[in-house]
Length: 277
View (cartoon, rainbow, N blue to C red):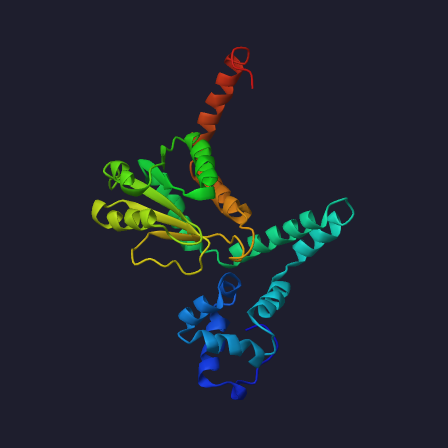
């Protein structure tokens, strides 16, 4: 733990267990409640609640405040100093500062192996199916629009409940399924993961949960912070992650992609009068 030094001899075995868990999961604690911390550390909620005072904090919120301050990076501070010269509301300043923090937490959790695996899976897939409930549908549309330029066939799964099965029968071993699981993985997402084991298709999960609660296997797990449960859930870090997937795919197929973009430019020039931009 990177907070003030702790006298381990003053901690009970239970509180020592919490301290050891925090030492290895400090970035994750920003996104968890006391109940979730107790589940992960294997102790009671009451023990977690008492722990913060033992290490010099009022409560979990106070601990997170100090942790957030320590996680602030120099570029973020420079940016805040720069925008201070312009006319912005306090809300805008707060949101910008929060966005930088979410990006930093996302980078802290970045798993290069999973990211490279996700890029390779999408590149090799015959079709990319995307399950995007709620506000994540915007990210699915972004992927659909950008990847179409690279020749990737994208199918956004727009059916819910038992109607999802109508699409499920068309997904085979040559496909990849990308599942957005913000806040939690929904039943449809669990079904998509479960069926992948028998159908043979690969699965990628993008989540804001440091620990994805599912019993089913997946091929790649990508984390994007959206803030704490009781805050406005920003999509800025998730968008950053998705755009990096797009850029990495573009880089891997640079020659083919440049040919397609050149062809697109030629078409725009040819039909500029008929279909103005």
